[in-house]
Length: 127
Image 1: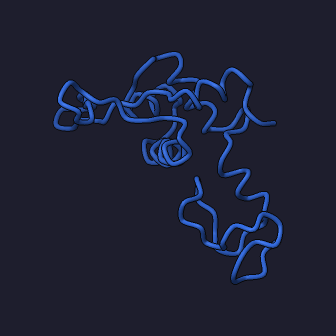
Image 2: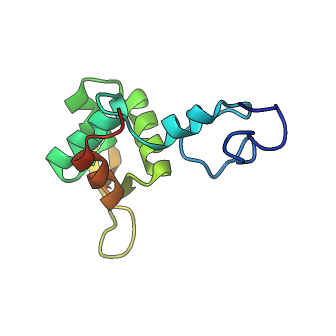
Image 3: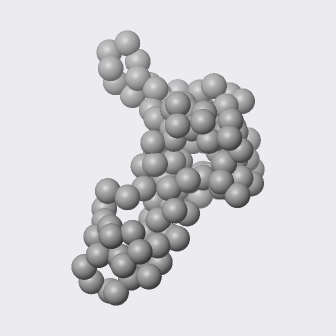
């Protein structure tokens, strides 16, 4: 449990640590960091990993369409997974983030799994 300022009494991490993956408030229970870091089986974040495994590479829009979820909600899950190191952007031959058309006048950045994302899928996520 946290004391409100300083460090968490359980994990010793500074409260409000901006380097931690996921969205965790400044007065967090220790378990919030664990939940923010490792995707759990049968959650939206885990499902995003499954879709990327099945597609190989995809935009947030393609993932959202496959999951039948809003693009905003999907983008939030993708952002959490990127922060945790489970997915990353695909780079083109010039080292820039690769993009694909997602609509008549819109492009989406292409994503792929990292080794950490593949490991989570192979191990079945946390339960």
